[in-house]
Every structure is written in structure tokens, then in C-alpha cells.
Amino acid sequence: MRSCVVTLSAISVAPEGNLARYLQEIRKYPMLSPEEELELSRRWRDQNDMGAAHRLVTSHLRLVAKIAMGYRGYGLPLGELIGEGNVGMMQAVKRFDPDRGFRLATYAMWWIRAAIQEYILHSWSLVKMGTTAAQKKLFFNLRRLKGQMQAIDEGDLKPEDVAKIAHALDVPEVDVVNMNRRLAAPDHSLNAPVRADSEGEWQDWLVDEGDSQETAMADREEMTGRRALLGTALTALNARERHIIVERRLKDDPTTLEELSQHYNISRERVRQIEVRAFEKLQKAMHAEVAAQRRQAAAGRAA
Image (cartoon, rainbow, N blue to C red; front, side, top):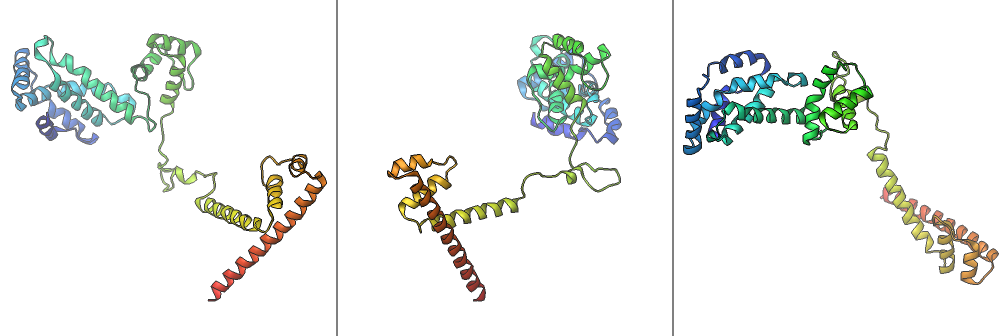
């Protein structure tokens, strides 16, 4: 079908402004009689005749446009819908078996609708929607059923309307509620201007409540420095002092004086005295290390 696609590019759907011209152009391609269609289909299937495939596709472009117009209510350009339908038409010609006894249009309409619906589902929302058969059916039938029930009020559907639609489409009621909300509140780009006469965009007004990258980096560096400073200062303590400080001051769930007194076979008061003395030594060691780092930095600047 590659050559067929290339040939069709000459009559591809133009932007919306020239859509009327496109619709006039495709009327020039004649409809095929059943006999002509059968002959062309066999020539394409048996001989890979690209000319036959081209005639089969172009003779059904009006069918594509008619089907695409039925999907205008989804807010997408009609030209794009027709273009996707044309792709579906070409896929239908590629797979059509003329000996099954039905017309190409009957077979092709399913491919055309499938191509258009798939495009709508992927283009209508910035957030990818579910594409199961039930969800597709719900998406493309919810508006029709709401119209039949005259349930056109804004906001959520009435519980009885939800129940009727869910029963008619054989889907859970919660899916009906969620889909109705999606259709009632389509996505809006954060790059859209705040006002028509303004250059400011909506995203300019969003506030990030989290820390900036600079703040997060500064916090990490400070924490790393504190840990290194503490590790150096702990070397000023002997093994027992270091163990008691870690157990009493540096653990999320501190060890009790009773547990440490049993561990070292000394009184709880003695453990407390060692803890206080060790903490004082730790503070002095840290102050001394900070002073040494400052002197080193000053010497480096002077040099």
C-alpha cells in the first residue's frame, strides 16, 4: 500500500480553511459499480496492482468524509479526522477479500471508524485514557445517551441516570461518573495565556512548594559536612565514651541508663557522668575542628 499512500498524498486533507475545496475535489472520483469494485479488488489482491488499489481508495473518500463528520463534536479539526479516516480506508483496502460476498464500503466503515476513534482517544486528552472495548464504548456513547435522557445539566449525573447508562452499556457505574467528569472538564494547556491580550502563561502562576535545587543541594552539603565533623570529633573519645554517646545521643531510640549500667557493670549514675563528660569532650573537639577548618580556609584565601 506504500505507493497508494504516496498517490493519496496529492489529495491529502488540507487545513480547515481549504476543507471545502478538498470536499469538492473528492467528488470528482466516480463511484464504482459492484462489477468494477470486484474486478479492481481482485487485481489488487492477485496482481498487487497499485492503480487498482488507488481507484478503490479514492472512490470511497466521500464515505470517509461522511463518517468523520459524525465525530465533529469532540473538538478536533475535521481535516485531521478525515486524514485519520483515510488511513483506515487504506488499511481496509489492503485487507479486503472480494470473494466473501459483501461490498468494500460495508467492510471499510469499521476500519475508518476504528482509525478515527483511536485518534480521538489519543488526542482528546493530554492524560491517556483507557482504551478497553468497554471504555471506548462508554466514551463514544455517553453523550448520545445523555441526550436521549435529556441529562444535559452541567455537573455530575443524577444517580438514576448513571444507573441507566451503566446498564445500557454494561459498564460499572463508577466508570460512567468518571467518564462524564472527564468529558465535562477537558484538559487545558499550562502554556495557554492567562488573558487574550497577555503574554503571561498559566504555568507562570504555579508555585512549587518544595525546596529549590539550590536549597536541597546546600542542605545535603551541610549534612555531609556535619557528619564528617562528628566523625572526626568522635575520635577524641575513648571506646567506652564513644559507645555511650552513640547509644544515648545519636540513636533514634536511645538506650536506657539501666541497660548501659548492666552492660558495663557500673551504676546508672556513673553512666550518666560518663555521658555528660563525653558530650563536653565531643563539643570541644568539634569547636576545635571548626576553628582549624576556618584557619585553613583563611590561609588558602591569603595565598
